Length: 485
Ligand SMILES: Cc1cc2nc3c(=O)[nH]c(=O)nc-3n(C[C@H](O)[C@H](O)[C@H](O)COP(=O)(O)OP(=O)(O)OC[C@H]3O[C@@H](n4cnc5c(N)ncnc54)[C@H](O)[C@@H]3O)c2cc1C
Image 1 (cartoon, rainbow, N blue to C red):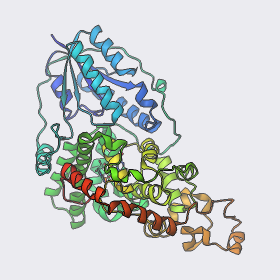
Image 2 (cartoon, rainbow, N blue to C red):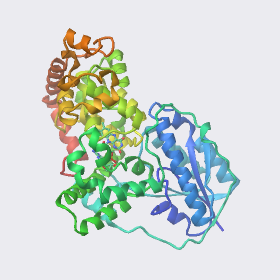
Image 3 (tube, rainbow, N blue to C red):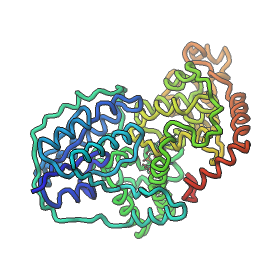
Image 4 (cartoon, helix red, strand yellow):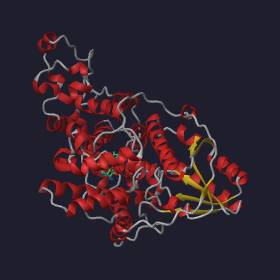
């Protein structure tokens, strides 16, 4: 009987996992997961990712044991060397996995693995869990092909293999990565994903559209499925099917609208992954190179203030500190944090994106870098949106409760001044035993002035012939869905 490896990567489930289903059709199967040593050392990796993977692997281990009496062997080190060792030791002739569409490091790693497998005459059979067009996007066909993919049933075969069980006692503490101490980050594992999906469909989605933009209500009203989708503890097809089933039943107008809006985001997810697959350079180059002339000097002082949540803009600081404790924040606030860094602070997204990649438990390079570029105005094809942190604060946290919780040094400020503490008079400050510039920083930049300068600078480039010509080519290559994202 043939010996095979099922290599779990960003698909930490056995349910509706086509790579796993194909692998267990016959032969002797060794299930593995590899923590790549260098990957976890990257500036974009962190203990948030490690924690989520750890939970998900423990859950996957349990499920493999219960359903197939199989173990899961976990390794840490150089991926290529580990695979070489396993192939030789177990005379492996086939490797099964889902294609991954990530950043440059993993793309290069996969090329190296492919070369290794070719040298050792091992077949690498990869399945595609996101409906990505491996022959690159066909502009007017992408959406219909993707819809066909998401609605198609997963193949199922009779399980007819023997599992190779290796007694592999793995200690997660061996994995070295950038450590961030936080207690509130989401837990991984398929059971948690199912619970989130069910509670979202049944109750939490009722006001999804109305409440998703505030970090206070968004925490509950959003599905919170993003890290589960990133690490594949649940498949997109399963999510789509359950939402579709719910929409066939009687539900309120609000819920119907919300579920439809949510469903379209699953397509956005894959649209952005396709974008990265088609143009991997978006991780480290402006999509529209006409914008390369901007943001040449990196102000380290501004960056540190933004990164640590001490910019003097209470809502920005509250969002950053919340994110650092939770490993998640809603879309609008992610966009605002990036917009503030890229426009008011004029920081290059190539540096700021790395820090947020670490903090987002759901770090998904395709979405991440596309969104960073959109929110920084470097695509040339999206509208320029510069968020006003004071307006956002008044709209999304009118009573300042969120600010008071995450920037406790401001908790005694009454009324609307919580949004603009620099307006406190000397007497105001004395009366609450608070000193601006000592207990909390004065704004590091002038919001109005820096917004105006940034808008002028970005429009100067956007209006140039060079930017316009390049934008036409970008639209041809990447645009596919008509809805806003
Ligand atoms: C600067 C920036 C960086 C981002 N980086 C990431 C990232 O690394 N990983 C990531 O998953 N999302 C990213 N997003 C998109 C979005 O903010 C998150 O997907 C969302 O907040 C996750 O919470 P949720 O699962 O509760 O979302 P829900 O609103 O419940 O959405 C459900 C799912 O749809 C997908 N989705 C939602 N919004 C978008 C979007 N705008 N574009 C593409 N897919 C979307 C996600 O898979 C999400 O889990 C980023 C947004 C911005 C502005």
